[in-house]
Image 1 (cartoon, one colour):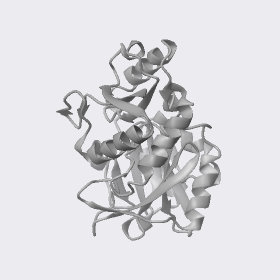
Image 2 (cartoon, rainbow, N blue to C red):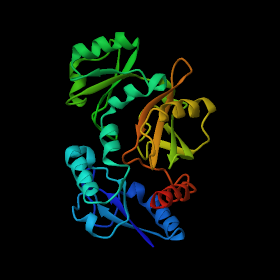
Image 3 (tube, rainbow, N blue to C red):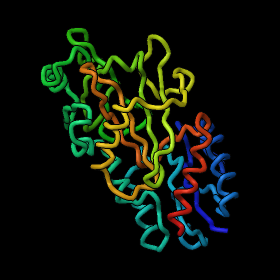
Image 4 (tube, rainbow, N blue to C red):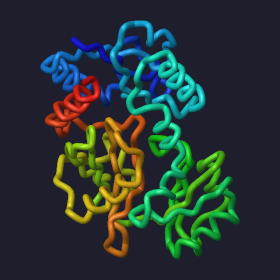
Amino acid sequence: MARVAYLTARSYRGTQLPPGTVPPLEEKSRELIIAAGKASSIDFDVVYWDEMDLPWRGYDLAVIRTCWDYHERPEQFVTALESHERAGLRVCNPSSVVKWNARKTYLKELGPSAIETVWAEKADARTVAQAFDALDASEVVVKPQVGAGSIRTVRLKRNAWSEADLIEGPLGAAMIQPYLRAIETEGERSLFWFGGEFSHAIRKVPQSGDWLANVPGKTRFVADAPPAAATEAAEAARARAPKDLLYVRIDLVLGGDGAWRVIEIEAIEPYLFLDFAPEGAEVFVGAIARVLG
């Protein structure tokens, strides 16, 4: 029986997580992964990512899963992963991928399928005003270059915003993108690959009047085959991303010009939506089995 460290967080949105547990949102996915693991002779042990003795506990592999506090201490997160790797514990996805994916400037590398973005060291009023013109947008979204869960993300309408609106926005380096109105109707598409094999896709549609497509309770999630053009755009971006990823989620939204735009690649600790696509657990575990050899 192979032993795999299933890395999780010590807290989630300010709430402490007891040892051996994961955020409530991922409990079903964890159960499915553990069950699929037993069928493949893989034993998963849920442990905190910052337990520095992990390399000496006899694990064959460490898989980053619900480390949803990493953005609160990103430097410590990378340092811990690098320490695990130096001590001989293989981590997936590796620390090099985490460093690449943690700052959303990776979008610059994804080619024409990536959403158009204005990059700024600080989202001040002048920069945002110029971004409206640079993007030729009637609405924009301002978000941190390093962040998760739509924290410190604001949506602004041309000629209907003020500097005070930026108080809730990014505190440091920011990114400004056109607001894609299709998010309200078509929704956002999330496509998953495990070990290079396509697994499943989720359509995320916000409640009427809302626009954030990743808020449980305010978003309708459903397993849904993606349009061919969405898959093509995601594959074009994936081809420019690091190779040999154990897992990757690519999020897309339909642009006003009818082209699908990649708004994010999540190769650190994606929510897998396995409670909506349980068959994905076997694909995920199969990819882990191949890594274990």
